[in-house]
Image 1 (cartoon, one colour):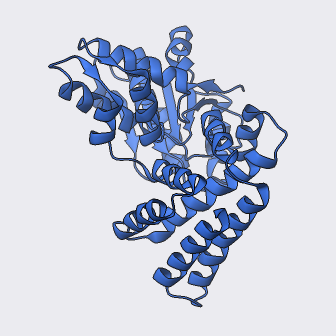
Image 2 (cartoon, one colour; image 1 turned 30 degrees about the vertical axis):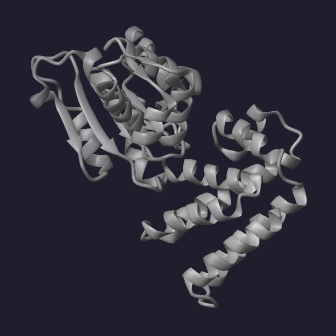
Amino acid sequence: MSDVKFSEFKTFLKNEVPSILVFFGKDEYLKRNAIELVKKQINFQMPDLNVCKIEEFDAKRIVDECNTMPFVDEKRLVICYLPEKSTQGNIEDIKKYSKNANGSSVLVLIAGEEKPKFDFAIMVDCNPLDVRTLTNWVVVTAKKQNVVFEPAAISDLLERTNMQMMRIKSETEKLVSLALDDGKITKKLVEDNVAAEYEYQVFLFADEVAKGHREKALEMMNEMMLYEKNIFSVWSVLYGHFRRILYSKISKETSRELAEILGVKEFAVTKARQQAENFKAVQLKKIVDIIADAEANIKLGKLAPEIAIKTALVSILNTRG
């Protein structure tokens, strides 16, 4: 069965609500929103009796709930999260059920980031939306309150929120409330009021490294590390970002092709290619190795985390020159 993108899901449901749906991807807000779209399409009169949420995955119970007839409403909705590693064994009952599914029930399975490998359900892709769709959403949302976003402000908002819909929604609402007096959201307003995700902070750090701004880059990274209890959450983002810049530098694929290979949005590759122009390939390879070696030294207990990281940061800055 072919995938359905979240942006197309509302239209898709107008034709029919399938018996089994699987929501997968990185954006949890989109998954929750997809559930609400299903509920709205079914148009429950008695949701308390006809919407069943199963907290712990139990294939037999799921099938039993799906085979229970709805009360008053035309359909019954059963929702359950798939375990992180779905094996053939723990979904066999659902696979058998799919061959003769109850037409009066809709089963929604919530998966993780990866698309499950079974083929008996409609798969709904809940990965972050593309830049154009998100931009349109921000513009329309602000316009309802007679507020206008500067183009640069939208771009900065998407970068700072890592294109995650839940944060975009909450930050847009906050910015709109701040701009009700003059009706305009500027880039400065976004900079002053929207905290950056690590991905964006690392992007800015890489930008400072590329420009040779050693002190500013070091200060920026030290500040990130100061407020983060788990340093590896930042360090892994740093490694992934410079790895992406390296591939952007040496790859002959288009940005779209490379994005598919790396499992990121085309927008991220485009930004990486812009930064890659300021580095030599050999410099990027050395930086990636420095980051990897620092993490290995910490995990093996060869160096204390603070010493390993500070040494690595200085080495990265020296590599750029």
